Image (cartoon, rainbow, N blue to C red; front, side):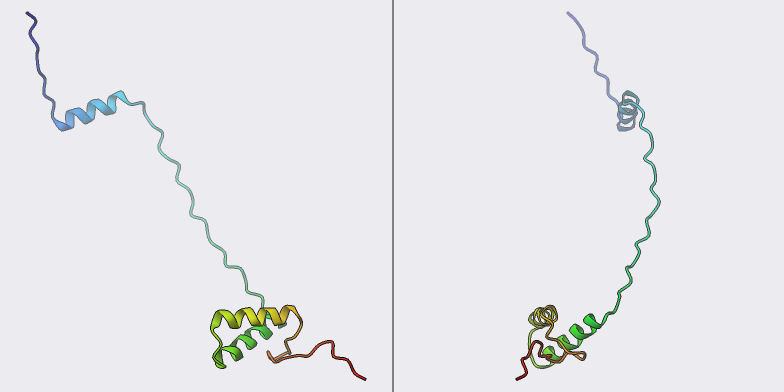
Length: 94
């Protein structure tokens, strides 16, 4: 009859045996932290007109998202005056 021998290892011995059987890994390269650059906000006449119109519409009780959409549409169509007022363009004179 063959006799069996049981061997018990402690937790530290098992982890040392597992580490010895794994190939060595190179340490990960450390990356330099990148600086996030803020883009300069260019204030233009168009953005001033839109900002003024949004402010006027919100004071009148129009929801913010709707006011923004209305002001941008009016600017795109060329209907905003210099202070956010309504600018009639293309009117015919007789």
